[in-house]
Amino acid sequence: MRITEINIKLREEPKLKAFVNVTFENVFSVKGLKIIQSKKGLLLCMPSRKVEDGSQRDIAHPISKEFRDQLEGEILAEYARVVRRRELEPDSGNGELEEIVFIEE
Image (tube, rainbow, N blue to C red; front, side, top):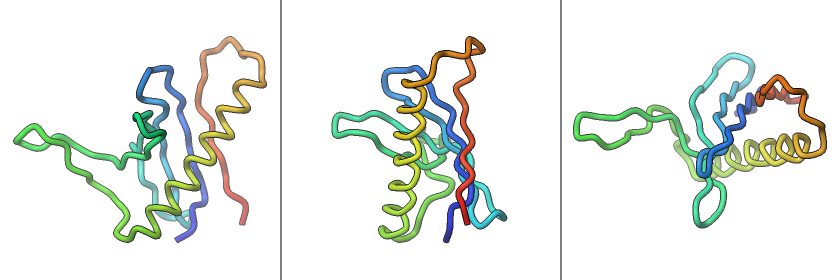
């Protein structure tokens, strides 16, 4: 399945680095993914909700390891590109930390 859009909203928090929305094939969108800084590096967390016992349960997730690796690789690569670009560009002063990336066909 091909990713056609990645929307990254950077966060300035110690662990939460960004919220991510992804569109597949220009027809299906998954919102609420998170990029988290862990002791082992950056992680892509799937959208989740709290269930009755207080734990979190994914509400959307890849079925295969191969697709998870593809999804994580593409999103983290875009995140790294957005972060590098933010570091090189002067602050626009509007506090906007969102970037939408349209993937070429």
